[in-house]
Length: 201
Image (cartoon, rainbow, N blue to C red; front, side, top):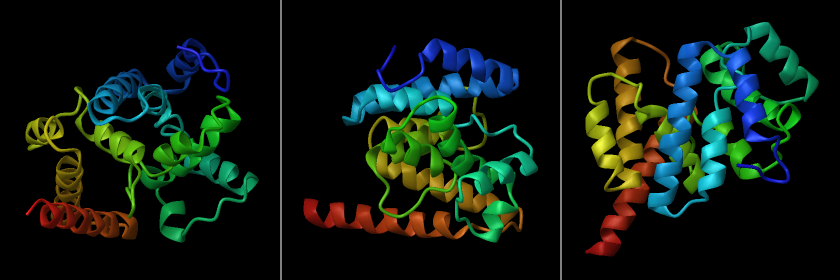
């Protein structure tokens, strides 16, 4: 697969194999395949979904200081909590690297990578797909994941909400901080689904 604006996908995969662990590389392949399947099912651009799936974790294994260097170099404004967390910061940093390193200047792909961990309000179709594909790809195994996978075959928004709920429950069980965008994104999805149900009545 090749797009005139992108580095050749084979070259991207070769680079990812160098910068990611074997486990993370397999995860990225699984997200790419799952994202393409979801895109085909729900009418998104399958090429964008596949490329975003491959690249979404490109910054995952950088050190926090390396992430900060990239943030500072590109004057990216983020709050203190995101800047303190590799788990949250790798999305925004990955959105930068996908353009500067891999030549992917597509705003939809960059946004999907930026928000793939936290989610947000008013998610685009591609953002939902990458958010969900990251959650349900085949190598993921945790209580309830099969239920979300089955739901993803029937209703994208319900599956995204279920993924939000599962993440938030896990964070609560760990007495962990729930990032604002995740909390707000979950509530936004509830309102969206309620609106769809009202329309269907």
